[in-house]
Amino acid sequence: MRFTDKVAIITGAGSDIGTAVVRGLEAGGAHVLAVDADHGSLSELAARLDDVAAQARERFGGIDLFFNHADVEGPVHPVAEYPEAAFDEVLDANLKAVFLGLKHVLPLVRDGGAVVNTASDLAVPEELSRRRLRTRLLLLAGLAWWSTADRMAGMDAGPGTALGALGWFLGVWVVMMAAMMFPSLAPTVALYTTMTRSRGADRPLLFAGGYLVVWGAAGLAAYALFELGRNVFGDALAWHSGGRWFAAGVIAFAAIYELTPLKNLCLTKCRSPVGFLLGSWRDGRRGAVEMGSKHAAWCLGCCWALMAALFALGVMSLTWMAVVAALIAFEKTVPWRRAATWGTAAILLVLAVAVAAAPHKVPGLVVPGSPTAMHAMDSMQSMNSMQP
Image 1: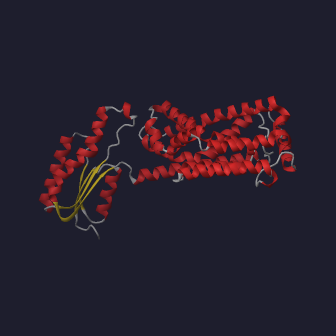
Image 2: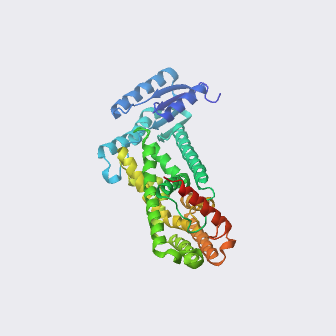
Image 3: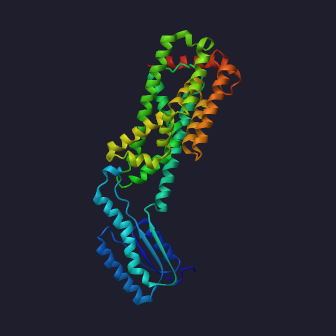
Protein backbone atom coordinates (compact mmCIF):
# COMPACT_ATOMS: atom_id res chain seq x y z
CA MET A 1 0.00 0.00 0.00
CA ARG A 2 1.02 3.65 -0.45
CA PHE A 3 1.96 4.28 3.22
CA THR A 4 3.25 0.83 4.13
CA ASP A 5 6.10 1.13 6.69
CA LYS A 6 6.14 4.90 6.35
CA VAL A 7 6.57 6.84 9.59
CA ALA A 8 4.38 9.83 10.41
CA ILE A 9 3.99 12.29 13.27
CA ILE A 10 0.57 13.91 13.61
CA THR A 11 -0.11 16.92 15.83
CA GLY A 12 -3.66 17.94 16.76
CA ALA A 13 -4.52 14.25 16.66
CA GLY A 14 -7.50 14.68 18.99
CA SER A 15 -9.39 16.91 16.55
CA ASP A 16 -11.77 15.64 13.88
CA ILE A 17 -9.25 16.34 11.12
CA GLY A 18 -6.31 14.91 13.09
CA THR A 19 -8.23 11.76 14.01
CA ALA A 20 -9.24 11.23 10.39
CA VAL A 21 -5.61 11.56 9.25
CA VAL A 22 -4.38 9.13 11.91
CA ARG A 23 -6.98 6.53 10.93
CA GLY A 24 -6.27 6.97 7.24
CA LEU A 25 -2.52 6.54 7.64
CA GLU A 26 -2.84 3.55 9.95
CA ALA A 27 -5.24 1.94 7.48
CA GLY A 28 -2.62 2.51 4.80
CA GLY A 29 0.06 0.67 6.78
CA ALA A 30 1.97 3.62 8.28
CA HIS A 31 3.57 3.84 11.71
CA VAL A 32 1.88 6.81 13.40
CA LEU A 33 3.05 8.82 16.39
CA ALA A 34 0.30 11.16 17.57
CA VAL A 35 0.43 14.35 19.62
CA ASP A 36 -2.49 16.34 21.02
CA ALA A 37 -2.00 19.36 23.26
CA ASP A 38 -5.50 19.23 24.80
CA HIS A 39 -5.44 23.04 25.07
CA GLY A 40 -2.40 22.88 27.36
CA SER A 41 0.36 25.47 27.46
CA LEU A 42 2.89 25.93 24.69
CA SER A 43 5.65 24.70 26.98
CA GLU A 44 3.72 21.46 27.53
CA LEU A 45 3.31 21.10 23.78
CA ALA A 46 7.04 21.63 23.24
CA ALA A 47 7.81 18.93 25.80
CA ARG A 48 5.47 16.46 24.13
CA LEU A 49 6.98 17.21 20.75
CA ASP A 50 10.45 16.54 22.15
CA ASP A 51 9.28 13.20 23.53
CA VAL A 52 7.66 12.12 20.27
CA ALA A 53 10.65 13.28 18.24
CA ALA A 54 12.95 11.25 20.48
CA GLN A 55 10.75 8.14 20.05
CA ALA A 56 10.75 8.54 16.27
CA ARG A 57 14.53 8.94 16.21
CA GLU A 58 15.18 5.91 18.41
CA ARG A 59 12.63 3.55 16.81
CA PHE A 60 12.74 4.56 13.15
CA GLY A 61 15.72 6.85 12.65
CA GLY A 62 13.49 9.59 11.18
CA ILE A 63 10.04 10.20 9.69
CA ASP A 64 8.51 10.35 6.23
CA LEU A 65 5.50 12.59 6.95
CA PHE A 66 4.79 15.38 9.40
CA PHE A 67 1.12 16.43 9.52
CA ASN A 68 1.28 19.60 11.62
CA HIS A 69 -2.30 20.45 12.55
CA ALA A 70 -3.86 23.11 14.82
CA ASP A 71 -7.52 23.26 15.76
CA VAL A 72 -8.74 26.06 18.05
CA GLU A 73 -11.74 28.10 16.98
CA GLY A 74 -12.02 30.51 19.90
CA PRO A 75 -15.14 32.41 20.94
CA VAL A 76 -17.23 34.32 18.43
CA HIS A 77 -17.60 38.05 19.12
CA PRO A 78 -17.59 41.29 17.13
CA VAL A 79 -14.01 42.57 16.80
CA ALA A 80 -14.60 45.52 19.14
CA GLU A 81 -15.79 43.14 21.87
CA TYR A 82 -13.29 40.30 21.33
CA PRO A 83 -11.35 39.41 24.53
CA GLU A 84 -7.65 39.96 24.08
CA ALA A 85 -6.78 36.86 26.11
CA ALA A 86 -8.96 34.72 23.82
CA PHE A 87 -7.30 36.25 20.75
CA ASP A 88 -3.86 35.41 22.19
CA GLU A 89 -5.00 31.83 22.80
CA VAL A 90 -6.18 31.43 19.21
CA LEU A 91 -2.90 32.83 17.84
CA ASP A 92 -0.83 30.62 20.15
CA ALA A 93 -2.72 27.50 19.14
CA ASN A 94 -3.08 28.09 15.42
CA LEU A 95 0.19 29.92 14.66
CA LYS A 96 2.84 29.47 17.35
CA ALA A 97 1.97 25.83 17.96
CA VAL A 98 2.47 25.15 14.26
CA PHE A 99 5.84 26.92 14.43
CA LEU A 100 6.87 24.81 17.45
CA GLY A 101 5.92 21.68 15.56
CA LEU A 102 8.20 22.62 12.70
CA LYS A 103 11.03 23.58 15.06
CA HIS A 104 10.99 20.28 16.94
CA VAL A 105 10.05 17.80 14.22
CA LEU A 106 11.36 19.19 10.92
CA PRO A 107 14.96 17.94 11.51
CA LEU A 108 13.60 14.37 11.55
CA VAL A 109 12.00 14.49 8.10
CA ARG A 110 13.94 12.34 5.66
CA ASP A 111 14.90 13.46 2.17
CA GLY A 112 11.86 13.08 -0.04
CA GLY A 113 9.53 13.28 2.96
CA ALA A 114 6.54 15.61 3.24
CA VAL A 115 5.36 18.30 5.67
CA VAL A 116 1.73 19.44 5.74
CA ASN A 117 0.70 22.43 7.89
CA THR A 118 -3.01 22.99 8.53
CA ALA A 119 -5.08 25.16 10.89
CA SER A 120 -8.79 24.44 10.63
CA ASP A 121 -11.66 22.96 12.62
CA LEU A 122 -13.91 22.41 9.59
CA ALA A 123 -13.57 18.67 9.33
CA VAL A 124 -15.53 16.57 6.87
CA PRO A 125 -17.98 15.45 9.59
CA GLU A 126 -18.73 19.10 10.31
CA GLU A 127 -19.32 19.85 6.65
CA LEU A 128 -21.55 16.80 6.41
CA SER A 129 -23.48 18.11 9.41
CA ARG A 130 -23.98 21.45 7.69
CA ARG A 131 -25.16 19.71 4.53
CA ARG A 132 -27.63 17.67 6.55
CA LEU A 133 -28.98 20.81 8.18
CA ARG A 134 -29.36 22.54 4.82
CA THR A 135 -31.16 19.45 3.55
CA ARG A 136 -33.52 19.51 6.54
CA LEU A 137 -34.33 23.17 5.98
CA LEU A 138 -35.07 22.47 2.34
CA LEU A 139 -37.30 19.57 3.39
CA LEU A 140 -39.12 21.90 5.80
CA ALA A 141 -39.52 24.38 2.97
CA GLY A 142 -40.94 21.57 0.83
CA LEU A 143 -43.44 20.66 3.54
CA ALA A 144 -44.36 24.33 3.86
CA TRP A 145 -45.00 24.47 0.11
CA TRP A 146 -47.20 21.40 0.36
CA SER A 147 -49.15 22.86 3.29
CA THR A 148 -49.55 26.21 1.51
CA ALA A 149 -50.76 24.53 -1.68
CA ASP A 150 -53.28 22.52 0.31
CA ARG A 151 -54.67 25.49 2.27
CA MET A 152 -54.74 27.94 -0.64
CA ALA A 153 -56.07 25.59 -3.31
CA GLY A 154 -58.63 27.33 -5.51
CA MET A 155 -58.41 30.67 -3.65
CA ASP A 156 -56.46 32.73 -6.20
CA ALA A 157 -58.84 35.45 -7.36
CA GLY A 158 -56.00 37.53 -8.84
CA PRO A 159 -54.89 41.01 -7.76
CA GLY A 160 -56.86 42.25 -4.77
CA THR A 161 -57.82 38.77 -3.57
CA ALA A 162 -59.54 38.98 -0.17
CA LEU A 163 -57.19 37.84 2.60
CA GLY A 164 -59.78 36.11 4.75
CA ALA A 165 -59.85 36.16 8.54
CA LEU A 166 -56.76 37.55 10.27
CA GLY A 167 -55.90 34.35 12.14
CA TRP A 168 -56.23 32.21 9.03
CA PHE A 169 -54.15 34.62 6.96
CA LEU A 170 -51.33 34.87 9.52
CA GLY A 171 -51.11 31.09 9.75
CA VAL A 172 -50.90 30.77 5.99
CA TRP A 173 -48.50 33.71 5.73
CA VAL A 174 -45.95 32.30 8.19
CA VAL A 175 -45.97 28.95 6.40
CA MET A 176 -45.63 30.81 3.09
CA MET A 177 -42.57 32.63 4.40
CA ALA A 178 -41.00 29.36 5.51
CA ALA A 179 -41.62 27.96 2.04
CA MET A 180 -40.28 31.01 0.21
CA MET A 181 -37.39 32.10 2.46
CA PHE A 182 -35.91 28.93 3.99
CA PRO A 183 -34.08 27.86 0.81
CA SER A 184 -32.09 31.11 0.74
CA LEU A 185 -31.78 31.19 4.56
CA ALA A 186 -30.27 27.70 4.74
CA PRO A 187 -26.57 28.71 4.26
CA THR A 188 -26.77 31.25 7.10
CA VAL A 189 -28.45 28.84 9.52
CA ALA A 190 -25.97 26.09 8.59
CA LEU A 191 -23.01 28.37 9.33
CA TYR A 192 -24.63 29.57 12.56
CA THR A 193 -25.07 25.94 13.60
CA THR A 194 -21.36 25.32 13.05
CA MET A 195 -20.44 28.36 15.15
CA THR A 196 -22.74 27.32 18.03
CA ARG A 197 -22.38 23.54 17.90
CA SER A 198 -20.99 23.42 21.47
CA ARG A 199 -23.63 25.74 22.90
CA GLY A 200 -26.78 23.68 22.38
CA ALA A 201 -28.81 22.09 19.59
CA ASP A 202 -31.69 24.52 20.13
CA ARG A 203 -29.81 27.60 18.89
CA PRO A 204 -30.57 27.08 15.15
CA LEU A 205 -34.25 26.54 15.98
CA LEU A 206 -34.34 29.76 18.00
CA PHE A 207 -32.56 31.59 15.17
CA ALA A 208 -35.11 30.37 12.62
CA GLY A 209 -37.95 31.12 15.04
CA GLY A 210 -36.80 34.72 15.47
CA TYR A 211 -36.57 34.99 11.70
CA LEU A 212 -40.17 33.86 11.22
CA VAL A 213 -41.46 36.14 14.00
CA VAL A 214 -40.30 39.20 12.05
CA TRP A 215 -41.89 37.94 8.85
CA GLY A 216 -45.06 37.21 10.81
CA ALA A 217 -45.10 40.82 12.03
CA ALA A 218 -44.58 41.95 8.43
CA GLY A 219 -47.60 39.85 7.41
CA LEU A 220 -49.69 41.49 10.13
CA ALA A 221 -48.66 44.94 8.86
CA ALA A 222 -49.44 43.92 5.26
CA TYR A 223 -52.87 42.65 6.30
CA ALA A 224 -53.65 45.91 8.12
CA LEU A 225 -52.47 48.03 5.17
CA PHE A 226 -54.45 45.91 2.70
CA GLU A 227 -57.68 46.16 4.69
CA LEU A 228 -57.15 49.89 5.27
CA GLY A 229 -56.75 50.45 1.54
CA ARG A 230 -59.95 48.53 0.78
CA ASN A 231 -61.92 50.50 3.38
CA VAL A 232 -60.56 53.92 2.39
CA PHE A 233 -60.51 53.62 -1.39
CA GLY A 234 -63.21 50.99 -1.92
CA ASP A 235 -64.34 50.74 -5.54
CA ALA A 236 -61.61 53.12 -6.67
CA LEU A 237 -59.19 50.19 -6.49
CA ALA A 238 -61.54 47.71 -8.16
CA TRP A 239 -59.84 45.98 -11.09
CA HIS A 240 -61.95 47.58 -13.82
CA SER A 241 -61.61 50.99 -12.19
CA GLY A 242 -58.11 51.93 -10.96
CA GLY A 243 -57.05 48.54 -9.65
CA ARG A 244 -55.38 47.39 -12.84
CA TRP A 245 -53.19 50.47 -12.98
CA PHE A 246 -52.49 50.36 -9.27
CA ALA A 247 -51.28 46.75 -9.53
CA ALA A 248 -49.04 47.62 -12.49
CA GLY A 249 -47.69 50.62 -10.55
CA VAL A 250 -46.82 48.49 -7.51
CA ILE A 251 -44.93 46.02 -9.71
CA ALA A 252 -43.12 48.86 -11.50
CA PHE A 253 -42.17 50.38 -8.15
CA ALA A 254 -40.74 47.00 -7.08
CA ALA A 255 -38.62 47.05 -10.25
CA ILE A 256 -37.28 50.51 -9.42
CA TYR A 257 -36.56 49.54 -5.81
CA GLU A 258 -34.29 46.75 -7.07
CA LEU A 259 -31.80 49.40 -8.18
CA THR A 260 -31.80 51.59 -5.04
CA PRO A 261 -28.94 51.92 -2.50
CA LEU A 262 -31.19 50.59 0.29
CA LYS A 263 -31.90 47.43 -1.67
CA ASN A 264 -28.18 47.05 -2.33
CA LEU A 265 -27.32 47.46 1.36
CA CYS A 266 -29.91 44.94 2.53
CA LEU A 267 -28.99 42.44 -0.17
CA THR A 268 -25.33 42.71 0.84
CA LYS A 269 -26.23 41.64 4.38
CA CYS A 270 -28.37 38.78 3.10
CA ARG A 271 -25.68 37.49 0.74
CA SER A 272 -22.90 37.43 3.35
CA PRO A 273 -23.65 34.92 6.14
CA VAL A 274 -20.13 35.22 7.61
CA GLY A 275 -20.17 39.02 7.62
CA PHE A 276 -23.64 39.16 9.16
CA LEU A 277 -22.95 36.60 11.90
CA LEU A 278 -19.61 38.10 12.95
CA GLY A 279 -20.92 41.66 12.83
CA SER A 280 -24.16 40.92 14.71
CA TRP A 281 -23.09 38.21 17.12
CA ARG A 282 -25.06 37.78 20.36
CA ASP A 283 -24.49 34.94 22.81
CA GLY A 284 -27.13 32.80 24.47
CA ARG A 285 -30.60 31.70 23.54
CA ARG A 286 -31.89 35.25 23.57
CA GLY A 287 -29.01 36.17 21.30
CA ALA A 288 -30.05 33.44 18.85
CA VAL A 289 -33.57 34.90 18.64
CA GLU A 290 -32.19 38.44 18.30
CA MET A 291 -29.82 37.45 15.52
CA GLY A 292 -32.54 35.57 13.65
CA SER A 293 -34.80 38.61 13.98
CA LYS A 294 -32.08 40.98 12.82
CA HIS A 295 -31.31 38.83 9.81
CA ALA A 296 -35.02 38.75 8.97
CA ALA A 297 -35.10 42.55 9.20
CA TRP A 298 -32.35 42.79 6.59
CA CYS A 299 -34.19 40.25 4.42
CA LEU A 300 -37.40 42.23 4.84
CA GLY A 301 -35.59 45.36 3.69
CA CYS A 302 -34.30 43.40 0.72
CA CYS A 303 -37.54 41.66 -0.27
CA TRP A 304 -40.50 43.77 0.86
CA ALA A 305 -41.03 45.27 -2.60
CA LEU A 306 -41.04 41.79 -4.13
CA MET A 307 -43.68 40.80 -1.57
CA ALA A 308 -45.70 43.88 -2.53
CA ALA A 309 -45.47 42.73 -6.14
CA LEU A 310 -46.78 39.33 -5.00
CA PHE A 311 -49.85 41.05 -3.53
CA ALA A 312 -50.29 42.96 -6.80
CA LEU A 313 -50.17 39.74 -8.81
CA GLY A 314 -52.29 37.67 -6.43
CA VAL A 315 -51.04 36.74 -2.97
CA MET A 316 -53.01 33.48 -3.02
CA SER A 317 -51.38 32.35 -6.27
CA LEU A 318 -48.95 29.45 -5.96
CA THR A 319 -47.59 30.33 -9.39
CA TRP A 320 -46.61 33.85 -8.40
CA MET A 321 -45.37 32.65 -5.02
CA ALA A 322 -42.99 30.34 -6.85
CA VAL A 323 -41.87 33.12 -9.20
CA VAL A 324 -41.14 35.55 -6.36
CA ALA A 325 -39.40 32.85 -4.29
CA ALA A 326 -37.22 32.00 -7.29
CA LEU A 327 -36.28 35.66 -7.77
CA ILE A 328 -35.38 35.96 -4.07
CA ALA A 329 -33.20 32.85 -4.16
CA PHE A 330 -31.64 33.99 -7.44
CA GLU A 331 -30.62 37.35 -5.99
CA LYS A 332 -29.25 35.92 -2.76
CA THR A 333 -27.30 32.93 -4.04
CA VAL A 334 -25.96 33.38 -7.57
CA PRO A 335 -22.44 34.81 -7.91
CA TRP A 336 -23.50 37.40 -10.50
CA ARG A 337 -25.05 39.85 -8.07
CA ARG A 338 -25.36 42.88 -10.34
CA ALA A 339 -26.81 40.78 -13.16
CA ALA A 340 -29.27 39.23 -10.69
CA THR A 341 -30.66 42.56 -9.46
CA TRP A 342 -30.85 44.08 -12.94
CA GLY A 343 -32.41 40.89 -14.27
CA THR A 344 -35.03 40.90 -11.51
CA ALA A 345 -35.77 44.57 -12.19
CA ALA A 346 -36.21 43.83 -15.90
CA ILE A 347 -38.58 40.92 -15.22
CA LEU A 348 -40.69 43.06 -12.89
CA LEU A 349 -40.80 45.93 -15.37
CA VAL A 350 -41.97 43.62 -18.16
CA LEU A 351 -44.64 42.23 -15.84
CA ALA A 352 -45.81 45.72 -14.93
CA VAL A 353 -46.22 46.68 -18.58
CA ALA A 354 -47.99 43.41 -19.38
CA VAL A 355 -50.41 43.74 -16.46
CA ALA A 356 -51.29 47.28 -17.56
CA ALA A 357 -51.49 46.60 -21.30
CA ALA A 358 -52.67 43.00 -21.72
CA PRO A 359 -53.47 41.30 -18.38
CA HIS A 360 -55.37 38.44 -20.06
CA LYS A 361 -52.18 37.43 -21.86
CA VAL A 362 -49.98 37.24 -18.73
CA PRO A 363 -49.38 33.52 -18.03
CA GLY A 364 -50.59 32.52 -14.57
CA LEU A 365 -52.39 35.79 -13.86
CA VAL A 366 -56.01 35.40 -12.76
CA VAL A 367 -57.91 38.48 -13.92
CA PRO A 368 -60.55 39.66 -11.41
CA GLY A 369 -64.08 39.10 -12.71
CA SER A 370 -63.12 36.05 -14.77
CA PRO A 371 -64.80 32.68 -14.08
CA THR A 372 -61.66 31.45 -12.30
CA ALA A 373 -61.65 34.52 -10.06
CA MET A 374 -65.34 34.15 -9.25
CA HIS A 375 -64.86 30.51 -8.30
CA ALA A 376 -61.95 31.51 -6.02
CA MET A 377 -64.07 34.16 -4.33
CA ASP A 378 -66.76 31.57 -3.65
CA SER A 379 -64.12 29.28 -2.10
CA MET A 380 -62.85 32.11 0.11
CA GLN A 381 -66.37 32.98 1.28
CA SER A 382 -67.04 29.34 2.05
CA MET A 383 -63.84 29.16 4.08
CA ASN A 384 -64.70 32.34 5.99
CA SER A 385 -68.14 30.98 6.86
CA MET A 386 -66.47 28.03 8.60
CA GLN A 387 -64.25 30.29 10.75
CA PRO A 388 -65.41 30.49 14.41
